[in-house]
Image 1 (tube, rainbow, N blue to C red):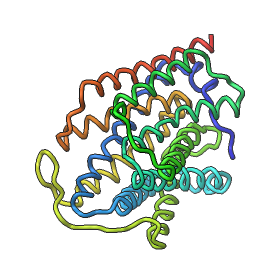
Image 2: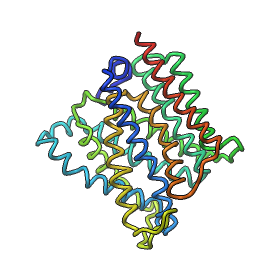
Image 3: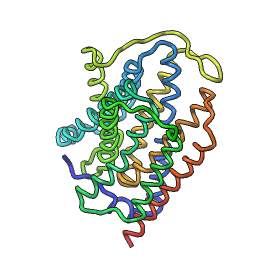
Image 4: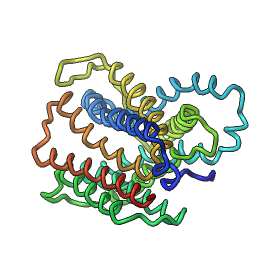
Amino acid sequence: MTALTHDASATPTALPSRFGAGLGFAAISAASFGISGSLAKGLLDAGWSSGAAVTVRVSLAALVLLVPAVIILRGRWALLRRNAGLVAGYGLVAVAGCQLAYFNAVAHMQVGVALLIEYTAPVAVVSWVWWRYGHRPGRLTLAGAAVALAGLVLVLDLLSGADLSVVGVVWALLAMVGAATYFVISASESNGLPPIVLAASGLVLGAAALLVAGAVGLVPMHASTQDVTYRGGTVAWWLPLVALGLVSAALAYVTGIAASRRLGPRLASFVALLEVVAALSFAWLLLGELPQAIQFVGGALILGGVVLVKLGENYRAS
């Protein structure tokens, strides 16, 4: 696999403007990914299966990004051939594999528990950077990880306890691996692939994998043309699908890659925890699900954890 950008070179030495742009891209990516759950819930209530919704989402994003990706490549197809393994890992593991594993996890356990396990991905990224590049995380970075994970526990309201399924935990851990792979591969700049090209090629491969999974019966595929109801009213079935493809997939993946290349995989993965806060906000706006006070406290802890991670990186670089 192509050498990957790590935080030692991507974060501490980054120019302020590059760091600021990275945070902006990360925030857009987190918000874009965060709206997907609320949009999808309306579709599921209208008769769509999760497999069909995610397949349309990934396929539409692939189609949207394919043309600009081809234009940006300018005939440099050798770039894709040289990075075939990287693209395969991104499309099969970070896109299709992560989605399939997560939906299989929620079939065996509570959604909140599965999401919490998946969002331990930053810990996996820290471990990867430590093992691969020998950069041991500092005390502030480890403290940031602990604070952010504590915030997730509060945001997901898991303190009351939840039943755990061994099969569900295994699937959720596989989803976590997919999420961690997304951050690590997205941070690679040495491969020469522009963000849109990497996103498009991975989404095309991921869409193909999901279609095959549906064809063999691994993922149920059920669709409906019934109108979809949200808090603000009823919309045509195709509107949330377009939003899922353009906003929560195409925009989310491209900005996520841009963020990871500016922040490094470790910090980018922690900032992406804001997706949980964004998801709760959109759930309130679109579904009328108002977060509790303790969940707002959890969101503040997530932000605090991100700040500690950044401070830890700056301290280690000085």
